[in-house]
Amino acid sequence: MEIVRQDAPYNPRLGLALGFEFDEKNGEYPDTPAYAVMQLKDLGWGGVEFSTVDTLNYTGVSNNVSDDIFIEVDTFYRDTIVGRFSGLLLSGAGAMMPIDSGHFKVRLYRRP
Image (cartoon, rainbow, N blue to C red):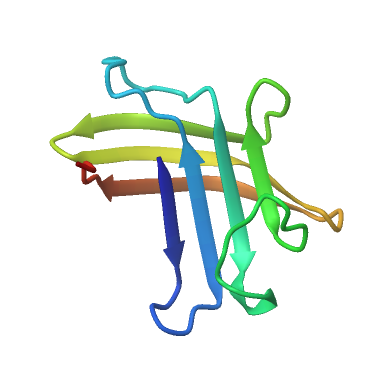
């Protein structure tokens, strides 16, 4: 699952992408995904695309190699997923940015 948000619809300045693998058959909550990625992007630095080779913005990864961020799915009901995240985002330039307590609530639509 990937959640992408920006601060303005037509002339965005900041964007946030949050991605993780979610197993709806897990059945037990809270659920902590085995893989997660988060990126905070200044869209004024070259377009609206999020990319893994982007070193100017802040990115955090949680997998079997790195554990920068924590994402937890609290509930999944009807077609809405609710969760929270925290951790440390890193920049290719060397800077770090802590995320203290983020929350998300997203309605899901299934693809045919």
